Length: 579
Image 1 (tube, helix red, strand yellow):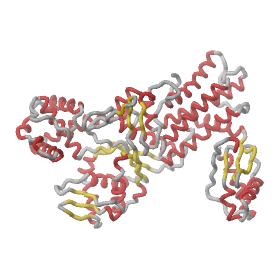
Image 2 (cartoon, rainbow, N blue to C red):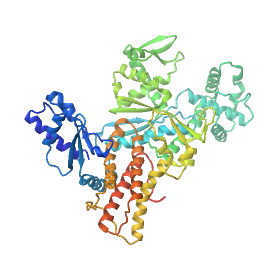
Image 3 (cartoon, one colour):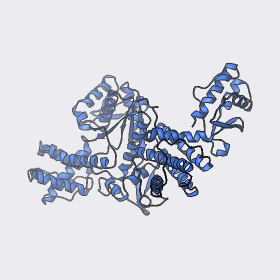
Image 4 (tube, rainbow, N blue to C red):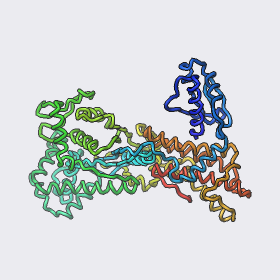
């Protein structure tokens, strides 16, 4: 819709420039939407911006701009408001045009090519494979997948990736936890199961499968197992157990390690696939380490003089690049830190040719941002091309009761359980109802309601209502509009034009949601569009006897349904034709 005003406005300004009335024309003209249609459909502050340089009062310059506007069938009236705003009032034909546009573009309505096929890598979820995904992880999954859809719709070449932390200490703790349950099943665990291990029921299931696979061949390591309860430091105790298992089991330790990793990672893959979240690649930290990438990145930092040795550990001078303290890359025992792997992984991302990298991390990882950016600067990479979106975990409530979500303790609601209870559609929609960096209270009871209080039901019902009308028309023997219906002149009612105006906003919202990395803008827009449609439906008889008016109104309604379907698809939500 803005094009109907931007083009004549551009012509008017070019004309005034040639006359010497204004000294320049801005490279990009902006138009705003007044909050009330009584103040116009679109408004420009161009007279205010140029008045000082032109040496004129804003209202006088606004008069000159209006006088220079070429004749247009789209603009029926202009007015000057306040200190010099120009308000534009559009003809009904401008609103009919969006309906024609939807007919032509259909499931591509709202898309654009602003991204220019730039290669963007999106990394999201990347939860440690130490347990099933819980309801907190679901928010990052829904946000990341929705953002990927929106960016693709804006013409970007998107590559989604899951970074699998399969080489760190937490995986060793999981392996030790599985081994202790393996011993416990045979009555060989010499002390109570420790609190700082993974205690979920899934660990027992993995241990049972391990016993089926290996029988009792790993039991020999229990003969000299350390006395963990006697150790005062819980972390030191579990580390001692891990070291003992690696030494005692030899090659079988890899079998033990893989038993937990493979089972849990397969469960995560399956869970996300069923949730409509897909990745181009699952990137293994273990493979990153084995490829020598961590060695190479660390050596490059050392060669550039950005590292030093202290207390036997290798430190990176991240404070040189704005971090609040220096960071350890390699511990005194020779083991690399998670940070060292992160440095190598991000260097490898840019080596693959991505023009921009978007990481979606849990909000508790905010402290990692400056250190990773510092490492990229030290490696002579453009840290501005790394964008980190912090995603707050969702908090699930059953009534007034907050549900615990601790992976280590095993007291959590899994994403799968949530999906089975409220359905994928409600879960995907509710997860993106807030900005990623805002806390989200997931109202379980509301997500299951079949009423207008539940926003996803309300939106889907609007879509289904359109198809219900089409079925009713067929049952009554009434003719339906042609697929390319063009006779819309009889759509003159203010409610019809307001509904068409709402459709014009969709492409703008799609662009804005991509630019701001905010899928919730799509969710809010769809809720408003559904409300406008339901109001129109309840106040206007659509299946009238007069064929031309009926066809025009049904064509408008089909445009609403198509726009709702396009928006819901971006959020990974279905658009049912019956409810």
